[in-house]
Image (cartoon, rainbow, N blue to C red):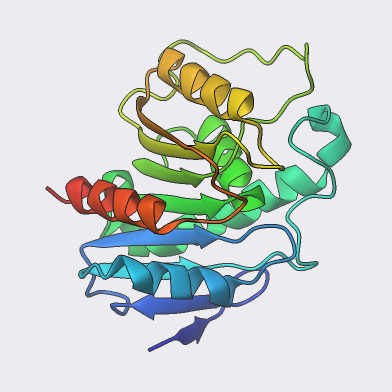
Length: 216
């Protein structure tokens, strides 16, 4: 049953187990001009037990105005505001310390996937895993972003993409996986042939296995 819970910004849509009962928490980040309700439907398709799902919403329908390949400054201050928003959701997911970072994971599609990656880079250690459905790390071609070595040590990441996605090129998907690995993350990369800008059944199955393994 879906439930609304208040947050510092817009309400959270909740699904799965209630507060105080779950073994882990998943934060669902929607894409540009998409809805949190769609992400809750996506979560239900995983058919996984023991999870409290939290789905925040961007106030304007988009987390930031530009594209991931714009200079980072182009998407400010909206990007930083979105990161702060997600940080508050992570606080709620932790339930005052009952669940630790290793029990909290982020799932994002497209713009939400880019945001999940940026959150991990700016708030390392706050979550234990990411499911990145068609996303990329921010930055214009040639823009240098420096990160400390082993910034993401211990983070587990599933990165998916396509060789024919019109929003996130395959090269960006592979470069994102490479950079995450360089920063110490444990990365599982899957690139699908001919898949349009959707979350495919094959990706759902891959993500189901990935999330299930987090609890093992």
